[in-house]
Image (cartoon, rainbow over all chains, first blue to last red; front, side):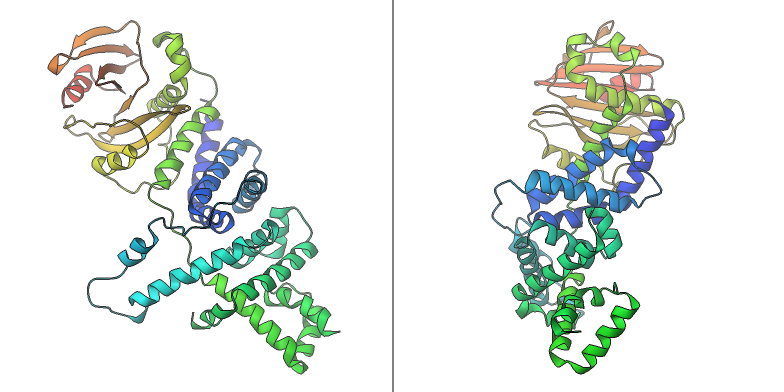
Length: 189
Length: 246
């Protein structure tokens, strides 16, 4: 194997490891279920690895990865029959209850009903995101979950900042309607 | 500006994306318009709700899978096969195994040439061999086995699963003493090494032993599985390791 390729491969590994949580997190919110999220994250990494010789190290790696992921999602997942929405933890109830501490409860946030409430909220948000068109969903994930600027999002999705502005606004209004009864939860955080 | 025009800018305002003059106009309007202020507040709550969600945790079994993909596509990235492979394995077998063995050998030669040690795609979790066995078992349709003892000074280093071809996987464990390294590969794919010395392992199993450029290779079959030990170690190290299998 030539040295240059080996060094580029090591660089890919470092970057992918550094962004692994972001990649998987975005895949989860975008795909909406555990199985598709896992496939999407893995396919994204495969495609990124194979195309890494075209990657410019001066550009942010996460933006490049998000773009690959979004294109993959649109191509591969958009036309698949939508899977029935299921919790991202397959053994949802067992998983949630496994988090309940058996010893003394040291703070309010460890209380069992708080844990269940947080998981229920995550499911509701996921369901609301799943109801959005894929381009609206992506902009909201990139802006509100991953914290990208409009300019950064426009680079990922290859469209104007004006388009991003409009999509985020429309997406948020749709989400607000679906999540109306949970909005006060944001105040508690 | 009308309320409709103002409300169209509210998300951008909440995200800090308005131009200075837009922001000034909007804030002036909000000071006087309770309706638009309520709209702004509810959109802001919606954003905060999403922001408040913690990241999904990467599942335990995703990490070995990501490693598998890295290893598998490392070969894709690595380029043409080496002469060593062409000489050692029969071409028919090589067709089936070239991917897994290419990775195996390429990793080995990189270590020999003193290259920087390869980091896993995702940070190793420091698993024991038994923990790694539990994880790889879920990924294959056979019962992988591990040696019951290792040569002195050696310890388990890595475990992963390769896709050889559609529906066929090979389990791969690495061991090191900090200086030298050897690998155990096991799977259903049949290997027929050429120019190998036939030896008898414990329990009467037949092994095929060969050497190439200081790399010792020991192959044997047991219970429908094929095993290969390979590394820059003395023959006897591989033989003792093979003998430790139940």
